[in-house]
Each structure stands twice: as C-alpha cells, then as structure tokens.
Length: 109
Image (cartoon, rainbow, N blue to C red; front, side, top):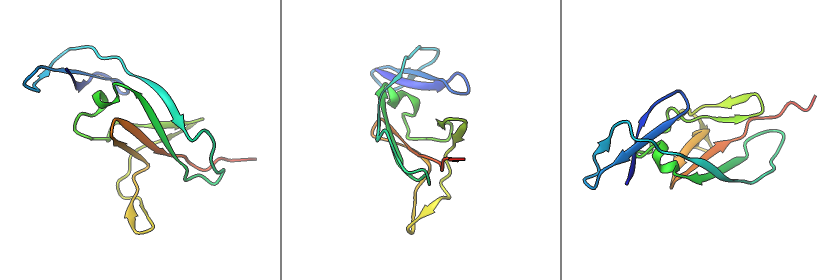
C-alpha cells in the first residue's frame, strides 16, 4: 500500500505496510490527470479541481500545509483564515484525493 514522508519542498513519497505503518524511504510517483474547469473569471475566485494519480500520497492525513497551486507567476498557498460567505474556504484544499485551488485575479493590462 502507499503512504508518506516529505522529501523536498514540493515532493512527497510514502509507502505503508499492511498494518498502515509508514515505510521510510519508499518511492512514490504522482502526476496530474485533469484540471477543471479550464477557464474562469479574470477577477479570480474560480475553484479549480486538480485530479491525479497517487495524490492521496501527498497527504494521507489531509494536511494541506505544504501544498501549493501555481497560476502563471502567482503561487497560491493554504490559508485556513479565508472566510467567504461566512464559511472557511481555504485557497488550497485537499479532499478525496483531489486538490482544490482558488484561482487568483489576473492582471489584464
């Protein structure tokens, strides 16, 4: 089974045994399979769903603190203090093996 430890600023790898105990120094590959939607508003705020293979390995506990999304030259980091319409809407969330990113505003100049 697959599971994890962070190895670099943007990399994660892990493997767990049948007792769900992390096996250190195991290698895991992951990659993006889809992004949706492919367009959004220039004012920002569009929630992008990033699906991929082995994304559960990035955060087996749901911790998104080291996850980032990049839109052109803008890097979006998690911020659980963001409140929209009275509820928390972290700009980078991880749920169900998918990463949810809130796109920033785009400078159209």
